[in-house]
Length: 167
Image (cartoon, rainbow, N blue to C red):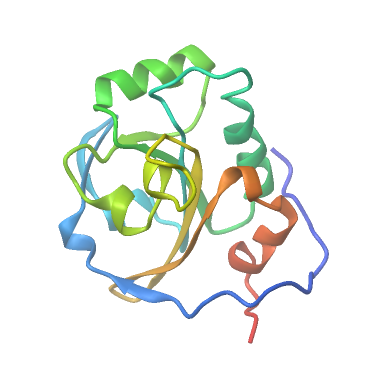
């Protein structure tokens, strides 16, 4: 895949990153249990797409592909995380042909803590896709923000996936 190069954009300032108690989150993925730092896979930044696997929707696989293309920058890894059990979520990913790592956060507060999917304001308790962005700062995982995918401006992602900082 060719690296996506985007112009520097002026947009809303992101909130200050907050430290994440990463030891509290245990995921199940293709290689078994994993902690939040392990989801980075050696990259400095992590984008977590929270799809809504409880419901099939037309075009449900499109946002994952678009997000992957927009986040294809040096040092950023995109993974898919759901509150669904791993076996169900992995089957859902295979159905849509996703070529991205899938992890289950079932039984953890991960979705509620960042908030994503059913916990997004205005979702009315229903599943809705979301995107959470994290970075590693030494031994610390920092949460940069979470956004509902229907409101996502893909070009604005450059502010959190690029190597420059907004002040």
